[in-house]
Image (spheres, rainbow, N blue to C red):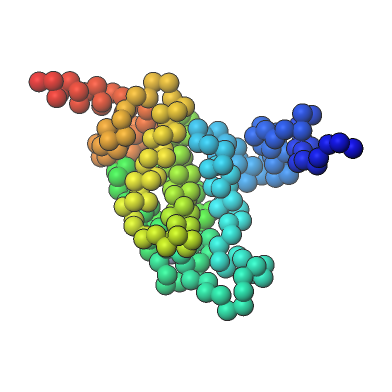
Length: 237
Ligand SMILES: [Zn+2]
């Protein structure tokens, strides 16, 4: 009496949602020893925001609400177009939208090209993620940094798809690539104490580092700051 109803997060004594309690709960559901659990933990070890990680996880477990997924659950009107929000040529499902669509495929190729990594892309979700991991198997710190790019890429692709579907925005590969780069730069700026590079410097530096050594590139923050110092020194003469 006298109080209104409100939402309560039952996994915390305070009733307030916390990322940590959600993580513990999900790990309990998935099982500690499963492959899914390994991938889940790796995602949560990165320095990206929890909502971006949560979306990447939904991509991995095929829980994104693409048009095909919505139609399967009878959440779309009968005869509603299932065409992809990016390329408008094929049906939109998770695998197509994020990996085999001509738009997202080009985004991934441009990102790898930027990093100096030559590869053939696999198009099913699990293989794509594993391939990304294996391309970057170096130090723990390095792996974590470059995993940010995978998380940022699937989020940026979804953001662009929504812009196209709901606001009629033009789909531009270069804008998606830049959005991925910006997201990762912003996360590093926020979480890495010694990361001082401007966005422009960082993008340029990754291209330089990638061309030299895709493995060493993984020290993104430190590598960037080193080259910024070198660039400033060069410009001073
Ligand atoms: Zn498409």
